[in-house]
Length: 563
Image (cartoon, rainbow, N blue to C red; front, side, top):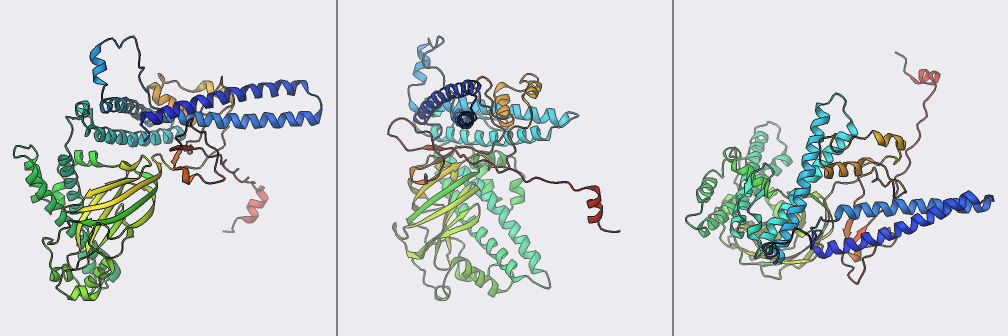
């Protein structure tokens, strides 16, 4: 976990070691420069030049590693300070949950300042006469990254608040719109909010699929493949709506009678079939903003073991309805049904319910894996899936019966809940009923954006650095100004004029020891025998761009077409 105090201590030790190496390389560089002035022999001079160039390259690498470690460090208050004289302050930080929440709040305040500064930069350049496209693009990317980190930190705060002793620390948290989030939600309330959110989404998807089916079915020349896909999407969304509505009704019965959201939940159950009414409701905006996960990149390993206590009698399902539930040819619906669920003809014709189940994995509503058909048990499948993530947010797991009942349970997992590089053995509660046994491991989680094209690092002489606007002149805080300079200024090889590199495309990635392949760039080892998390720094340099030779006017005229 990035915000773990033990991991932060490892970062401090690694930064101190890099600082010592930088001082050592500076002494080597200074000695090589003095030796170059004194040597007159060409052979010795060439050797000295080689040592000097190697020292400069190593200094640039060490500076880059130190800047990346500084970006990962979390600001912490001093343990012993002159203002810490009140004994009540020590009582507030006795439990680990309260200390963790306070640390997260400090990091959240920093990111909020960075976000405000980036918004000020965008406003200044949008309203100004001269627009610096590079600075404007950097500010826009900084604003997007800051919003992503803010959502991640808020998710961590709510997650820690569920532990004992952490509820009182989240009473004054604010969302993106500035509204205060009073208190903390119980696990039942969180489940209800997620069900409401999913109900609105599936209602909108079902309405869109219904419109597509109506549009394609009214044409003279029908596209059977597109029509079958739309019918399949409509059937799947309708089945999800049935399950989500049933689960929300069960959760409503579990809530106290005096709960303030009982009326809202009843309205959602009534208007769940009309998403146009639901999406116009203002309360959905706050719920969706709270439940929106961050986009992540990396590799996800999922091991599905089995299920138990599934819903055997699914409401609203019958054999006839599963064959011809939408307008159009029954053969198209039946073929799309068989292609999607993999059911054989004997199960379609037989009225006997099957006891075989299968699970389907979807990543951001795209199918990425499927288990075999096995009799229902807690060890039914025991299959592993390795999924490559590309700015993905959620993993959906659907469980199917091998008969006309089809989809009987569903579960949505937020990928940001598995950022600690640990194997999570979980017993997941399915919607509306049942338990799924699974293991999830996130490898190489990356929150930042992907690398972009890199330019040459030295694009202007050092004298132009004096013309940069300072934080007060740009109407931003020092945190935003420092992060902006890290993205704009080129690197140098001196401690007295240390400046961050121009490129923003190389970020440290968290890799497991087994993933550290031979030939990869050397990493800075942490002291001690805890090689759990390593920071990988790439040494790859961008290739030089090809030279473009402009032709002579005569050649241009010869190559131009005759009009």
